[in-house]
Image (cartoon, rainbow, N blue to C red; front, side, top):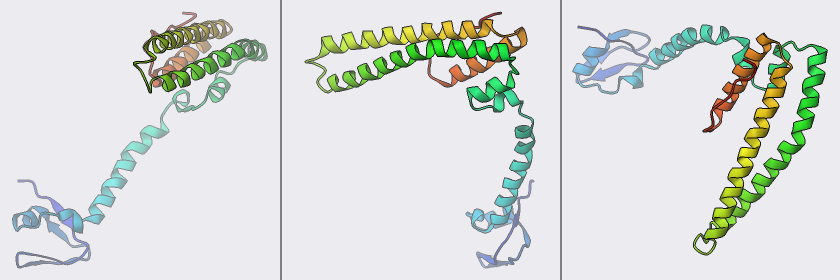
Length: 189
């Protein structure tokens, strides 16, 4: 028979039995047997110590997380790649080349989604226009995906094999956070 030990923070009377408070350890099963169902009301100390135990068990794992997974932004990640000046220059020029087109596609998508939202208020009258807008949004999304894949391939080509592995892992992890149905590609392997 397992006994549940309970630390009482205040005096407790259950069905005529008196239990002392002030840190006395009582048999929790005995309390339940005599009708005291909400032991948690007198066991704050026990809950606090469970929280400390949980923190003590989890904290070492958080400390041991590799730096690659602890990074929260692409710029932090890039610093961790230890790029040479030549690589930094090359990657910056690749970014500039793709950024304008990416922004343009993103704005087109937002504009069409807003228009689609307006038309959805009366779907029967605008069925043809709604279908056309949905197809246009799908085409823009495919264009954005193709643009991203070209960008990723060019950046990957500027990296060493070790950097490529880290880059692909980071990109796959970041893309995995979003809701995507496409197959992720790994360049330079």
